[in-house]
Length: 403
Image 1 (cartoon, helix red, strand yellow):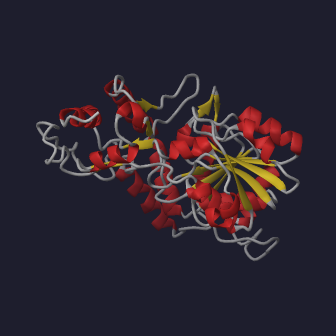
Image 2 (cartoon, one colour):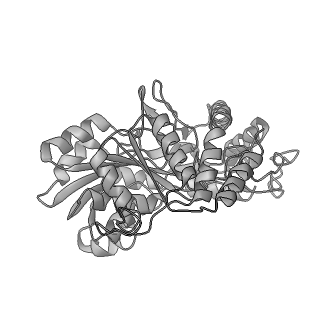
Image 3 (tube, one colour):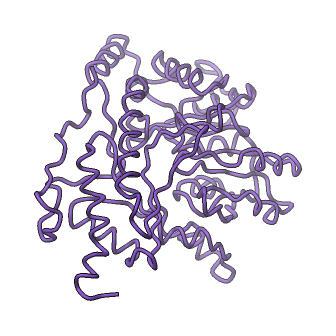
């Protein structure tokens, strides 16, 4: 039995979205609300944890979670970490990255912060305007003698151009990490994300497709790298009291692993709900001028955790931010990802104030992308209402005699 982890009935809808002063939804619809899980099953796992009296330090639930993820994504090694940011830090350190690391400018700030925290210099690259991922044709122009790594980000769960990225990296002898925070359960063709590059990093934050309250996972085919990572996440201990390397505390607890395993069991129903919602949004927004819904092409698989719009203000009649504010007045809390792009964010912008690079695609998309609520908090009728709100805004200008 799957039980909603935050049970709320489908949002009550107003009789007419035309009544602008009355919000269309009684309670806010949020981006990234946790997906449902079976609470009884979670309680069983937690009871077992309490009975064993083992709450952390690579317990049986963590080991089971690692095996389950490894089997699902088709890799030999998965290392559970306290969160995905710590996972990025450990991966960069275990791979011996120094100097400069190439990173897309259009991503969540943690991708760059994890590198900067280690004393590495993120070098920001532009993105492909169609995929929203790192543009591999731009990478080679950014490589210098100080470059030791590339971090590709599978934005919205759509796989990077892994073949080209890894060809470029191979020619220059540099490492490749993929930030797969959005991409659990996704694929590149028939190959699951998780086995590309030197390693890939999943996020199991509460807002993600699969969640463990907080948590992350490093997936790799490299046994030596996996061994180093296991030492590093636990202070460098190779046994009860034998320290063999430097390390930190980045372990995942048993309670977090219990949640991760329970969330994995709900994955089929979560995916079914996400797909249903994506199709409903696609149908509801099909004919809205200036509003483009990012679709995901076969044969790649996607988890549909993100409903991503690109707003063309000239064709739609309003800028993205105006639409976001319009939706918010109706308790639809859409998110402006990723604004501003990272090369315009402190501390990176201030460090390069004299010579901030021009990354036109990242800058343009940072002003146009809007992510809409989805998941079990919504039914198809709710989505129809949100689509009506989006269609309604240009008509308000026309009714007022505007252009």
